[in-house]
Picture 1 (cartoon, one colour):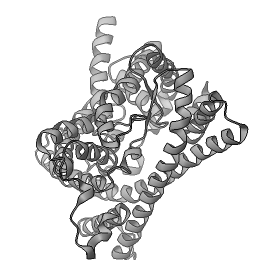
Picture 2 (tube, rainbow, N blue to C red; picture 1 turned 90 degrees about the vertical axis):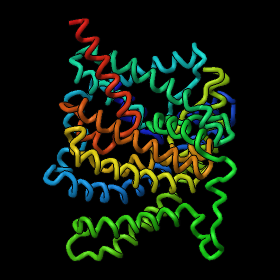
Picture 3 (tube, rainbow, N blue to C red; picture 1 turned 180 degrees about the vertical axis):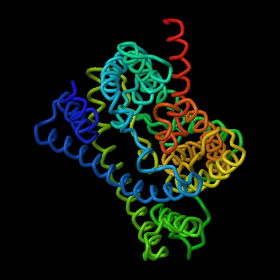
Picture 4 (tube, rainbow, N blue to C red; picture 1 turned 90 degrees about the horizontal axis):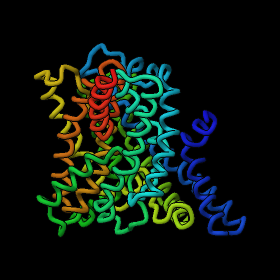
Length: 420
């Protein structure tokens, strides 16, 4: 089982390539089409991952600089990772993932909730946070594994399904769902945008003067935003640039890298959709009738690219203000760090959902409200995970991890209390 977990389930290119292959085999395609489809799906996933890697690589130093400003002597490199917890409970997480996948497929086969969760790395991270919640609640052994498996299966099945109408309103395509911890933030954004937005004015119809029409390109706009962020952060925390390094040109290079990462990511998205959706339809027709794949959130970025950048900016401004307030008044008893990565990916997805419900205004207002929720959720979750993965949550929380993790911890406490 460890071999399958490490080399297939936690390896998105291989996983999606095999799924594409199975779908094409079920459809009785010839060998040339099967090989081409499987490899192209794998290539698409690798290209998408490469783009995401470039984006995260440019955002991470900003996150680290904020850490230096607000948290002083906390050792970022030593504490903000999952290694310590995984060393002790990695086996439990792996078993919970394996059992959870079986339960997830059974839900899709025998209920009306036809989600198949295909975001490979999230197949690991949700059992990870649920097992950590179980540990916080005093569970261990088989009980801990079953606890993590059941909650993971329920999340993988139901959250993409709950989001489906919002996603389909944006894409006008009911062939896929979103499987990503943007769920609660996107639902909040969509709910708010529908009530306070105006669908008549789209982010894609921004009235940009002809001389500034280059701002319509997400790669250019995103690159400029990241460049400006580096320059601003450098004035606050000069250590973002190495000794002797020119901060202005560092910002330019990082902005160019971010823009290139967006282009690569979106190209990978298009390749992946073109291969995995037709192949998956073959699987759903034969094995799990009516099944719909839930894919990573960048899949919807291509539908409203301007909304992604608008959402990123709105999320960074709103959440940073809220974090300054929370830290100033010590609301959570823990120093919070600006959630740069969550602001781009999760709130970028929330902005697209908000755009689908309320246009430009919906994207901005919906994402701003979602960002306030994001900070609140992060603050609660870092308290709940005080003895396990608190520092990991400080970087990657503020999303579904930070909503369902504390709920899981409360359930674990309740269950262990009854059992004990």
